[in-house]
Length: 382
Ligand SMILES: Cc1ncc(COP(=O)(O)O)c(C=O)c1O
Image (cartoon, rainbow, N blue to C red; front, side):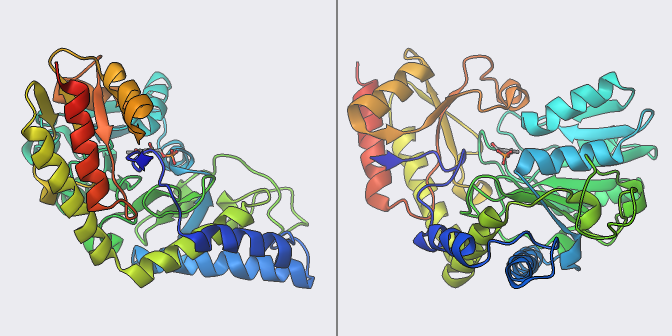
């Protein structure tokens, strides 16, 4: 079996991830922050250590501003719902995932005004169009770092600067880039960074978070829900301390411990080495597919301008037929269709039929992607 669906969730995980999760259950199974006993303190320590690892990875100023959530969608909802009020203006790119578009469309129904900045057919952002979409009244600009459909990398620093010039905050959806690309939120000017733990960060499902930069006034960010935090138990009001304000209820300590082991693995291997490996695999896929008759490639066609995501379609076979035959006849696992991103597919001209998406990961080898190209050629052969 060749797994080429790492953009949906990474697999396999480093073996240390499962080990750390088992260890947490066996060694540190108390409820963090809820009791003063040894197991509770140990659980709290483990979670705090991962907060620090996340802060280091993204160069966030303060680990207490790393808020753990269940996934990227949860983090994005916290940021969007927490910041935007009726009458506010928000700008998003035309490549966004439904984890951004669905909350924004709902907020639009509740009185928030939404402007979508157009992108080119290869998924790249037109900075001039963004500049025109952002105005002095804009509260927030939200954009993904890399597209889950084409892998196209967005000009984050330039987009954040446009937001800031208009007095807006900049929210980055790093679901496809965290763990795959270097990401220094202070250097890039990212005010809020939403990440997911189960994709390129190589952690387990049920992990993710929102990282707040120093420019975010937390008195203006409402929690998504309220409840027990283990702190200030005398009060029936939600505490304002971080991260408790946004982390009510028992956290996913097991998952967070697994995420910590994954972050250790990434630090040992090095982001630059991971990026170089994935870029080379992406290039092999692009070159191999380009040579196949009847194939249309989507995205920039340049591995240096994209994460490890390659999308294609064929002139006569449907994407579901290709995906099914790759799986059943060749053991190659891909994701076909619209990838929860109808806006992106409209932008690149593949709506509603979609594309076949190939997404190698750090454990994919050159042999794997060469075998995948041969199998795709066999499936497409008339
Ligand atoms: C660009 C993008 N944003 C957000 C998400 C949502 O992440 P999660 O599945 O962790 O909620 C995804 C996942 O597919 C994604 O690709």
